[in-house]
Image 1 (cartoon, rainbow over the protein chains, first blue to last red):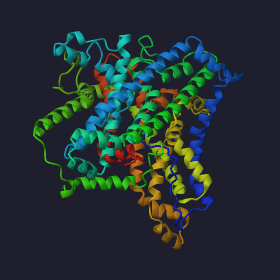
Image 2: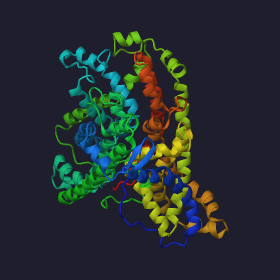
Image 3: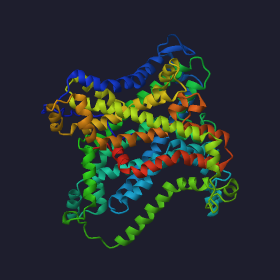
Image 4: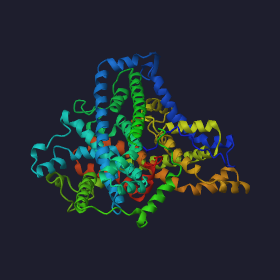
Length: 320
Length: 308
């Protein structure tokens, strides 16, 4: 999840109104055309088509008639889809919850500590951000080796300090495996908020903090009543991007539990379920049902992202 | 998301603030006098930061460390140092486990898609910044929407489209898909940059008789280099790391990129630990090098468009 912290705003941007330079429509179109073609063919068309796929019955790769909402009904009510869906969905929520918790405690704390430093700030930022830039596939496999019950270094460390009872078959226990996935995901993603919170804090005018300090505010109060309210938009961006990332998460669960979410579906997530339904189920109507699943997930991500944004905006007004 | 303003001066301003940080603290920036116990606090802070630093890169260091040791050494001592470092595992992974192929494929796909995506994006971004057409403004909004949409979910139609064209198992299809995926971010960053560029230079070039394309190539491209660097470096990371598209779009092992090659590798060599660690290291090293060289560009990319 290396998503940029960019947001699509409704802000009206100044369009070089006061200048003499502007491209004639034809020239502008020629400049935009290559990008528009690529975007249209490889992103826009598949997005629209994915929606339409879900409303058809499929016989293999051939459409076998309009199906209305029957694919959705099958997905949400029939075995094994309904149960798998609930199970996987819960795991996605756990991923989101775990990541948000880590980011806004440990991540925010580290960013605040680093903000006051001068010399070692960049070095620590680099160290903390490194896991975030490494492929989630590498991260997942690396942790699967680290946590291996045989020669795994994690168990070796635990035994080495006398905590033999804590040495576990981390990924073999169905009750434990999902927490490992949540922990590894949160561990990887924490570099992102550290960098973003750091940048946001760097953008707060030092005069504000100083004024509060001269008024006798303690450093905690300055953080709580000055820094935190000014960070709310950033917290909002990070939360939305984390939500999207958690809902689309696939590489780490795949590396840690394979495509079937082993052991016993305990590390299953929505994208894995989608992948299996689409490519491994053997069901003749797999395209219809997996497209319904994709559409449900798509709408859910869209709606919740908007809700989170609204909520953060209101929280921001309250805090100020 | 109106609270989040598009900051037009993002890139230059970031640089400016960094400069400000380097300058010696003047009277206005002086910190209030430290309270007692500041020493203890500083010590605790240091312990905490170094402690988490170990947690953050410990696993990555261990990965490199164990890739240099033998199977037997890892089995008897999972945490030992490579006292007699050996590169055997790298040689085996590179030659017998196809990592050479995976690496070359990853390089071709990443370089190709970043180059293509950047070229089409810089052209489009210029038009967005300098055109008054409503149609193009609408196109820009459609591009921008790609920043927030879960585009992964459109994989099925994409797969069948490429399948119908006979383009699955082709690196070209990956290059085209990744180039398209990069357009929203790249046009966004570049258009912001073009918009804050003074138009006088272009006007002068036009008066000298240069056409729009010539003006663009001769006058604007050299000026937009910092933003191009951000876009290129920042797009490199997700393309190099992605496993989703190759997993689904590539059917032929000879076209596998590193992340999806790893899935095959871990199935087949699951007992050869040094080689597994070596494979993971091979997939990671180019990224780490890029990150260390271009930290600034990566951070600029991550914080692009964020309000201050």
